Length: 64
Image 1: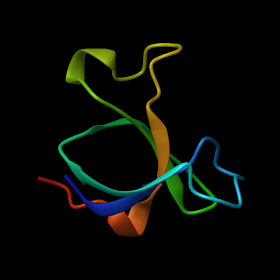
Image 2 (image 1 turned 90 degrees about the vertical axis):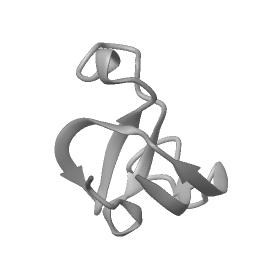
Image 3 (image 1 turned 90 degrees about the horizontal axis):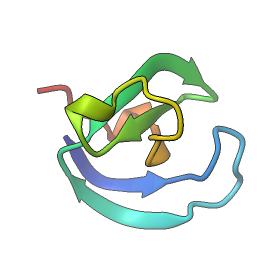
Image 4 (image 1 turned 45 degrees about the vertical axis):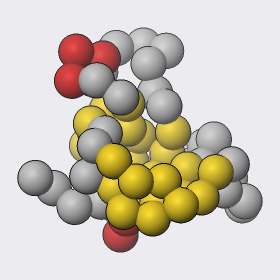
């Protein structure tokens, strides 16, 4: 679950592409790079190539 999260296009992006994001997303991969993880919109898309929605700071994630 994301609360007031920032979406980044890449793990190394300096600026957020979108801010204030809330809702349920799924961690695409547990790999953490620059304190960010990749997320996706559906459980069925986890780990599938080309299905990353954004990179999100791990501080913005609440695991349910």
